[in-house]
Structures are given as structure tokens and as C-alpha cells.
Length: 282
Length: 134
Image (tube, rainbow over all chains, first blue to last red; front, side):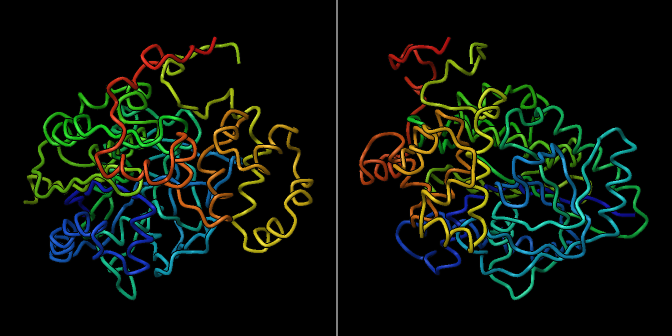
């Protein structure tokens, strides 16, 4: 049987990808952020998962305003790297896992989560930056990936509570897959940031710290945070943190925090990285 | 945009909701076209002519041609879309954020290095003197 063994919460700031791609990670500006990544890479290399589900949002790359899927799952065997307006990132294309992805699509829909299914889709920094952060710069990514997109670009995104429930449905679906696979799930985006308007640059370290603490101990309390509260307290783009709830909902009720790194700033954003292991697989 | 929402009380913030989506579609779809290198080249060659291919209002057109980043948001621009114009110009998210908040690039960069803009005093319009949209 397949099993989710761990979750990774990870910001996906595009500038982090640029810093990696241009070899700037050792500069005075970037070093304080990047010094927090090797430990996570070592943990993940040791875990050596068979497949990763990456929950992220597309940023006007694969999808425009023409079609706006609230929840979408990618079932392809390969996902090319998107041109987001400045050329594709120089990173390997992403290998999919159609077997588990189609099982998830069918199971989730029958479990009353009406997923959009994508057979062809380029992936953008929302998915590739967390891969770069946790895997470095390999010639090929070390595991196949199932992209799971959540709309956060057109208001309203799904609620935190709905995202948590989707995560729980993903946990059930993975558990009913008949191959022995060890699965890791990423929740990406955040933490506090605002990219737009006169209020751009908003950062709320206190909110972020409480969110990181609560995600392990009492995630259901965090699912009650409204979109307006995210936007007011953590910046208009801080609402991306609903995607972390999908990851958390896919884990056991009892988890152990095994790693945390937090840094301000990466460009306009507060960056968080946290690893949670299911107690049952620790 | 007469209907009010509870997040309208947040200062300096332009939530891309149904009200903005209904006026911003053409503007944002123009921005989306810049994902293609050929379109970026054509836009840079003759911006006015390229914009003729999209049903922008005169004010939307002005904000693009004048790179009025804040103005674009007020006429239905979505930051994830309008940023593609900035990428065409060789600007970064931080460059544009500085321009939207009305401070020089160096001042904005220093604010971020010092921990970012505090939420204190920036949660509600009444504390920054802005009028609530009605």
C-alpha cells in the first residue's frame, strides 16, 4: 500500500529560483536564506521518497483568466518548464506519476472533490522553486512529481478548511493505492507577503511564527483563518498559505516537526521551510 | 463597484475579485500574451500597435504605455499578470513594488532588509487616513 510519510511546507518565491539559476546563493544577501537549506536537502535525500505530490499555484503560466480551476491535478508523464515572461528556468523537466495521479483523480472525485484533470501542462516557479530548494541542482529530479494546483490568483481561493479536507481526502486516496510507495507531500507558497499596491512589502513575523507553531499542534484552529484575515495580517499574497493546509490535512493528526527555517526577506517575501513527519512513520 | 467587501478596509490593497475581473479581463489577457517570446519582441517593437490587438479602455492603455503600475491595478490589472510587462522591461518584482508604494528603490530595499513593512498601523484604512471605498 502507498503511504504519505512526510510533509514539507515551503515558500516558492521566484527570486529564490533566480538566485539559484544565476549562482548567487553565496552572496551577502542570499547566504542567510540558503544556509538553512542543506539540512532539509540531506533529510529528503535520506528519506528518498518514491513520489512527491506538490501543492502549488500556477501564476498566469499554464492557465490564464480564460479558465480558472480551483483544484487541479496533473496526470501527465512529463511536465515541461513554463516561460513565465522571461524564458523558462534552466531546470530539468518534471517527470510525472500517471499511475498514482489517475488513482488520485478518480478517488478524489468520487470522494466529492471535483478535481480538474490536466493531461498537458507546463509548470512554473510555484512548483520548481520548492524542488530546487529541497533537491538542489541535479540533472534530473530525484523522484516523479504529481502537480496539484490551487487557485489563489482570482479571488476567492478555496478556504483553508476546504484545503485541509482535500488533504485528508488525498491521504485516504494514497492509502488505497495498491503499490508500495512512500509519498511526500509539499504545501508551497507564503509566508507573509504583499506584492501589490501602496502596502507592498508587508511582512508579519508574529503571524508567520504562530502559523508555523500551530501547523504542527493545532492545524484545525488555523483552518478558521478567513481570507480577509490572511490579507490583513499576512499581506494580500499571504493568502497562499491556504495551500499549506492541503499538505497538513494529508498528514496524520499527530506529527513531529523535524526541521524549521524562517528568513526575511527574499525579495518582497518572508520565507518559511518546515518539515513534518507522521509519527507513525518516524 | 458599489458593493463593499470586508477586505475593502485594508489600505493600499487591490484584491482581484469579481468586481475587478469584470473590468480587467482584456488588460490581463494582453499581459498573458507576453509569455511568448515572439509576442514580447512584437510588443517591444511597437507597443501602441501591439495594444491595438486588445480591447483595452483608453485609461488601461495609458497605464500600460506610461508604466503606471499602481494605476494598472485600479483599472483591473492583476499583479501576477501586469508583472509580465515589468519582466519585458527587465524589472523585478521588487522594483515594481517600490514604484507602487511610492518610494525610491533603495528605500524600499532597505525597508525589506529591515524586516518589511509592519502590519501595525497598516491594517485598516482609517489608521492611514485613506477613505473607505463605498
